[in-house]
Image (tube, rainbow, N blue to C red):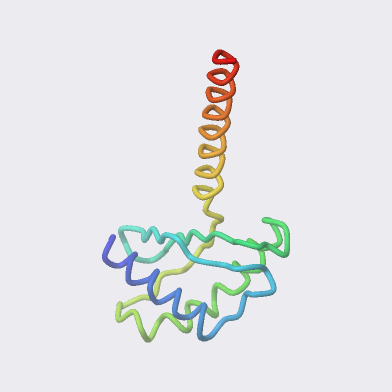
Length: 119
């Protein structure tokens, strides 16, 4: 599945740059694809930088393009059936940023406490 998922991800990224324009939503990138064992469906995770719409609006807009992505992907994928695509916002970048901020805040607090002990 990983091989197929990576292939689908690579193809979708190419389609995003060549065939389907989503720039009105922000800077959309596909981050991960999870293909079902029967290869009939694929969950495609995306992230958006410099978003121009709400998460809900972005998700609706991207999922409205599912058939177009599938149409462009079919000839390049070389499988008996092209998987149905379902798009989901990838929360891992947001989660990672929150963790980094917490670590940074702890470091600042420790630095402030250390500085106050020395004065």
